[in-house]
Image (cartoon, rainbow, N blue to C red; front, side, top):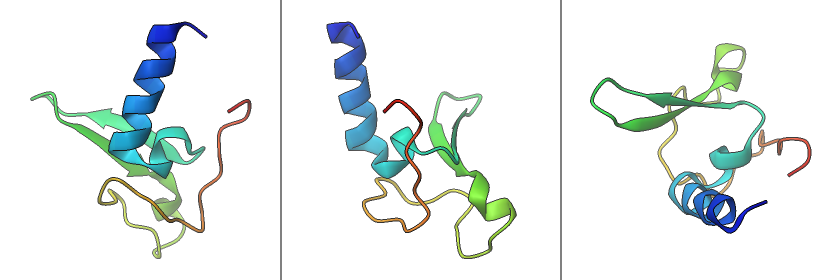
Length: 68
């Protein structure tokens, strides 16, 4: 991994918390350039917010991406 990639990953993790590397999180960018994280678990489990408040520091449904 390049140094720039490592820095980008660190910035994402500090901004989004656990969502930055969660299997169920999907990054969504608005037309105005705002960045949100959609929790895809919310589609099947109402205990999960569709767009959680960031940074997420504790989530019992978090599953890291493979290889992370």
